[in-house]
Each structure stands twice: as structure tokens, then as C-alpha cells.
Image (cartoon, rainbow, N blue to C red; front, side, top):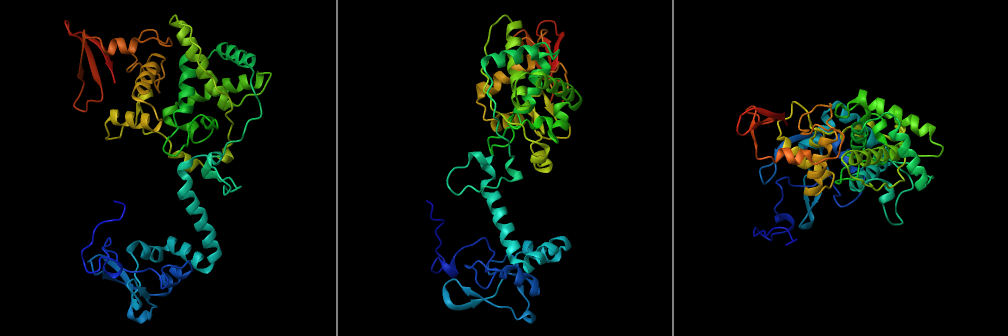
Length: 391
């Protein structure tokens, strides 16, 4: 365990070690940090050969009079250099060749680029820089770290209640507020700590234009929330205001259903700027599907239930949390296009358990509407009359 696999060939190590099939060294000094990689790649001619294991690889031509690399098991022995087809592409592809030539000419630029790329590779899953610990955290904050400014305000209980009243009197519906808060928070990925409500990037590109967020409707909601932010006597970030809007909406939806519920609100989210947002990089967070909003791209050949579980997993939700959020968002009217698919209630905007009552009703029998099984029809078990036609 932890020691690789047993190799009974020869000595089992060094020159006799079992590899992937690619055999040899890329540079004459394979244990030394130097500029030799681009030097030998660009200055030698290479021909396609096979390794002792039969794998395709490239070695310098005889006319190249290439330097040799030391043998693993014999400090006095020498062996030919080798390259993979991926390496050769850095020389034969015109665009990659330009990059290779630049790094070959300027080794300091290569070292700088490599150190930054390595730092990104080994830290990308840690999220924003303020999560890093220790004395060696770089002072520079990079765009791929999704920087978010710190807030300097503190909202009192009175401020929060005042903002809740402004939100309730704004004309925004429970569905609009819940949908906007979900759109902001649901981009979070537990895998690399990216996305989420902090930063308020819902109001920025590319997130503001994602189809799943209904851009026209989203812009109307954001414009009203920005008005509330402007009219508020104190200070609040849009990131916090969007979340507070969702909190207010859930409390109001519970009140409509006959219950008094106090939803906790934690403040402190900052607003990122467009300049602090890498549009291309952040674009990869756009969901292919969001079962909580009953959204899926039409050209996907993946089971919707698998995508729902994948989304819940990225959000680090437990099974009960996933279930209650799905049922709650349905009755609150949070479907991405405002459709009634899967809503199962006549009182949209009230936080009832109607979704679960109807989906588990034994008087209703469900059957797939087509062979793709992406939509099911619910019919009265006795009369056969259609009761629901929902995803």
C-alpha cells in the first residue's frame, strides 16, 4: 500500500522499472531546473520511434547530434532523449510554436509564467484568497481567485427590519425575490469554493445574461433592488440585499400559509466589480441544468435526476435539504421560466407542503408522457382524468 506495484522484471527498479510505456528523459539533466526543454525541442529534429515497451514516442534524428541523458541505473551510461506527440505539437503547431519560442528566448518570463500557472493549479480548489492560511500567502490577489471587497458597514436589527419593509413595499413578489436569491446563491461549488452569493456577481456579466436566470425578469428585479439600496438611509451591498430579499420572501410566504417564521440573516457580503470578474472563467459556472428551478438545456442527453443530484452535491446539500428545497421552490414559484411544471399547488407564493401532498397522493397514478421519460402525466386512479402534467 502506497509503494506502487510489485515489479518482478530484472531489478524491478531504475532501468527495469515498469512505466506507462513512455520511456526516457526529456532533457539531458532531468533532475535539474534549467532551460533545456525548449532548447532541445526547438533545436533538434525529431523522428517517430517506439519505446522498448512499444509506445509511440519521438527521438532526435542522428543528424541532430543530440546530447544524451543519463541512464537511471548507471551514472556513466547514456540514453537518447525523447518527446511525446504532445511535446512535438508545441513545435509543429504555429500558435504553440510562438509561445515555445518566446519561452526559449526569455527564461525569466518562462519561470514567471510557470510559477503563476503552478500556483493556480495547486490553489484553484481553495477558493478566495482570504481562505488561505500561513506566512507564505502572496500579497497579490489574482483574477482567478474571484476577489471580493470587504464591507465596512454593520446593519443593526432596526436597519434589517427597515430594509425588510422596503422590500415588502417594493412591489416585488415572493416568487421574484426567491428566484433572484436562489440564482445568486446556487452557483456555489463546494468543489472549489467558487460562486455563491458573496460578491453579488448575479448583477454582473456573464451571470446576468444566463438563460437560466431569465435575464429580462432578473434585470427588472435588480433595478428595483438597486433603488432600495439607493433609498436606504444606511449602507448595504447588493450581495447582502439580494439574500435579504430572499429571507424576507420566505418569511412572507410562511405568513401567507399561516405560520410565523424567522429566517436567520447573516450580513457581510461584498460587491465585486465587473473588472474583478473574469467573464470567460466565471462562464464555466453556468448550469447545464438546475432541477430546483426545473431547468435543463434541451440538447443534453443526461438523465435529469442525475443532474439534480450533481447540482445538490456541488451545493453540499444533504438528501433532506435537497428534497425540502426542491419542494419549497416549486410552491414558491421559482421555476426559471415562470411555468407551472412541477408546481403542484394553487397557492403559488405560499410556503405550503402542497408539492409533497400531491406528488405522494395515492389517488394519482403517474406515467411517462413519452419514451424519453422527461415528463410525466398524473391521472386520477379511478377516473383516468388528467390531474397533472409536470416534470
